[in-house]
Amino acid sequence: MKTKPQRVNRPTFTLLQHLTTDHQCLKNWAAHVPKLLEECKQAPEVIDGSKTAEQLAVELLAKRQKDAFIASCPIPEGTLCAVLINGLVSEIEWEALAQFVISVAESESKDSVPAIVTGNARFFTERITVTKGAALMLERTEISEAIARHLEGDWGSVPQQDREENERCLTAGGRLMSAFGDGGKRVWVITEGDRSATTVLLPEEY
Image (tube, rainbow, N blue to C red; front, side, top):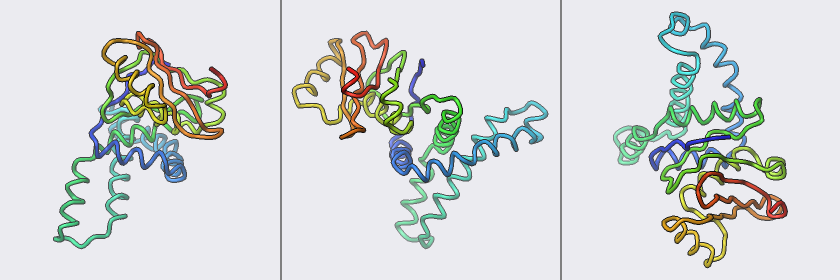
């Protein structure tokens, strides 16, 4: 799978990280996507060609997510907390979150990894491969999160010596390696020195 991670701002990335750790919440949102897409195909703006069903679905899902977030923060208007929450709401890229949720829903039917969304990628990779073992042991969203953290230079739980080597290789060239999770869900993420490929695998598959 060839991919170019989508960059989002820090508030959006923080909310997305929370969403990917709350698997039930993410699955609930993703479960609405197939019906939403079907409804969008019958919308006047889709029929007349001014928008695609996918574009309209992103807009509608983004609004629903924004409304749900606001409803989960019942803070009296006029208070300092309300001002801060409203400021945060205005900064979040809701359509980027909606696109991610839709990619999660589509990945279930296509047996693929959801879109990779990163707040501050330090490098890019041309191709991402997930081994059979990693795909079986981890949720698809856990794989996406591990890749996003790796691209941001969060090397996970590798030893300090490997961290220092990664930092050197970022500028001088060379292989990059991260490690995330523990027990049966521990995975390595390895990017080749020329950045042509990144692989997510279980340690025993190395």
